[in-house]
Image (cartoon, rainbow, N blue to C red; front, side):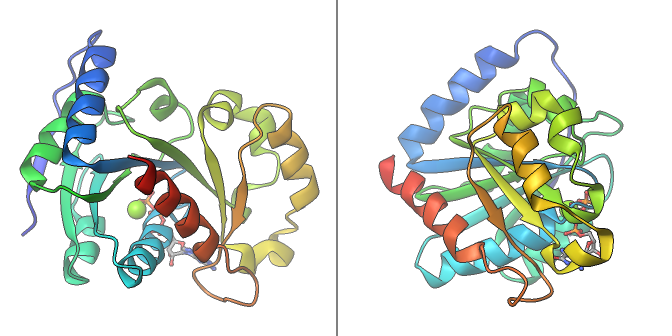
Length: 219
Ligand SMILES: Nc1nc2c(ncn2[C@@H]2O[C@H](COP(=O)(O)OP(=O)(O)OP(=O)(O)O)[C@@H](O)[C@H]2O)c(=O)[nH]1
Ligand SMILES: [Mg+2]
């Protein structure tokens, strides 16, 4: 059984905890990446591919999983031999800087990249700074190409957009140009097209790994 941390929210002090996390991460030579997106957007599938790519490049990674309940996603990473730990928010729609720190301290990790898979939600996670160095949203094609127009705070908050399930673009009628136009109205973040099903429809994992590696080397 993986380690599970149960979240108890401490309201009003998130910025203080986020700042402390930034200092601790710099000291440990760790890049923390906050991965957000809707439920089922493909966050775990994308992270699995990215962690394997980073491993092939000699970069260590660990994954802190945030879910209301269960350790399903953590079990998948542990099975693949990665450091992983579960946070259960027991009803909360996001994870905060304080609980991330509790999980991080239990991981006992340094010199690498820690990915935080946030709770599946396009609203609340954009209100909680974790002290991370990079923010990614996974946007899946079946969610629809209009999401940047509707979920403006989230799409404004991120440093990179990973378009997942690109193998389903035609099936769901996803218009990439329309999606990008909506994104550009609020953010100039780069877009990476990926698919966990077919390399032919998208092969953006290498490019996003380049971005993560570049950010890691800056710290
Ligand atoms: N066709 C297709 N299906 C995908 C792709 N990526 C993920 N899926 C499927 O989409 C479903 C959800 O994927 P996950 O990776 O678990 O998504 P998630 O965002 O981590 O889900 P939660 O953690 O539950 O919010 C699963 O059935 C995956 O197999 C993809 O690129 N193409
Ligand atoms: Mg998941």
